[in-house]
Image (cartoon, rainbow over all chains, first blue to last red; front, side):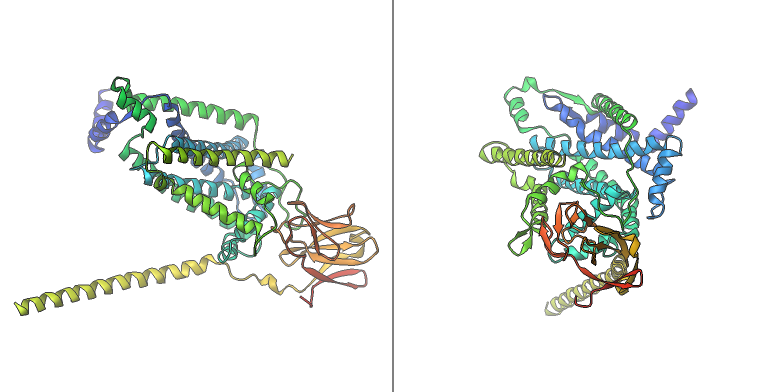
Length: 362
Length: 154
């Protein structure tokens, strides 16, 4: 026992434990009626860690060729002990991670947490969103099933509609003119090497910035606390907030385990590039609003195709969304109310178009 | 006074020169690293462009009022035996977003299930989002064998 304590002391001294713990003890988290929203980012981080762990496990058996990809995933789910569970957790955690990331982003937007001096935290978060969506798009193809094959054909074709650079970008993504084995190896390299490296880097930057600037207080709460200083309430990040966050992670893990065990992710049928496309092609749910918008646009708008106009409009909207902190510089007043309207519209549009997409595809 | 100012000016111009030299060396080495990487990332043009004639199968493979999809190089091609007994063929890639089209014997038309695009039997886009007609292929019957060839007119 004493040896253990002296060993701990040995590491404590050499790792600068004093500095770390005094920082953690000093770090405070405001406690108010919106505090529950502070958990979402942490849950997203937790799900990312699960993705890394289950992704490494899947790598032990997966083979990225058109001949073997589908068979190797079927081998994982049918033969490898608990393989079905590992794959199901990977697929479900991916979807939950995107869901929690979107919820985190909108809560940050509604609570105005992106305002000065946290603009770079927001921007690094937007980059992480783009990386996570690319993770989803590339991972979807890896089992090489019919739905994914044609969804990738349509998705990369849409990128090809962008004027000037589109065709070049499409050939680059596909590794040729068509979706083939070259596309599979490209998406595989992207999914297991490039994206994890980039995402880890931006994640560390994001967390580092959160540590520097601390946790943001919504303007409405800030005003209340200034008017009535006795209502100000904060808890220590360590161990009080950490304990609550861990509890939230545990709930997320429970939800994930339940979904993965009782709703195992299906595999579908093997992709055949020389078979007709099946009816009911649709993207993953988080691209549904884009898909549905493009569907209702006319074939041609001016000299461009409807798809090209739609893809460019979404690109512009994403850029403006990333620049949100630079438009919103006042806590109160007309400008602030206008910003709430913009954020509400974005949330409403995405939700409505997603529901419409599923309703139309019944 | 004059001499020292001159010395200062020559010092600063020497510094400027060195900075310029260092900067352009760094840029040049970056370009020489990145150029091969970028070239590596863009795949070489596929050899399948050379595909001109393909054996699609036997006439018994395609009954009357039915279609069959066969590989034409790396692309799928659709061979149709029409209700009036002709053989026609197209590249089976929808001109909208690249899904593989199929023959609908109930409509006697070519259908893309992804966005409900419809082409008639000349390959013309008649309904739905496709912006252009399908690329036609020539069909040659040699005995009982069906050969597809890249259309010489296009």
